[in-house]
Image (cartoon, rainbow, N blue to C red; front, top):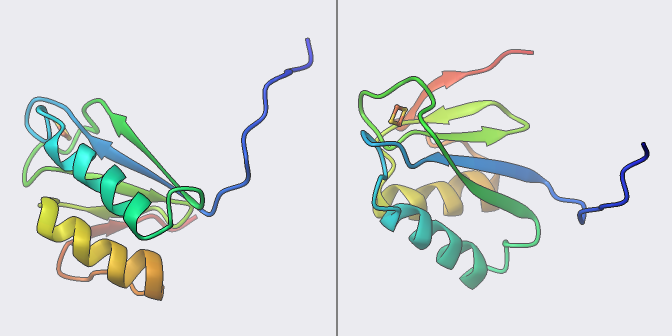
Length: 103
Ligand code: FES
């Protein structure tokens, strides 16, 4: 069966863990969505909550695709830094990154 649904093109897909050791109350997720909208990035950057990503220390954990950049300790202040540096200027926030996927 051929799919009939479509989505708009996007540049990045952000997954933010909302598991019980990360952003269980989703306050950071709500803040991330608000900030992406304020910066006019919500059409270019898709952000979705994720279940446990299997790295429960130093949460909240965020993964940014297609780069495969993994961030830890993501709180609201970190969201602001990631948006300004990574999403807007293309520079990974090194002190929050703990893994970089190498395809
Ligand atoms: S609960 Fe977030 S990585 Fe496990």
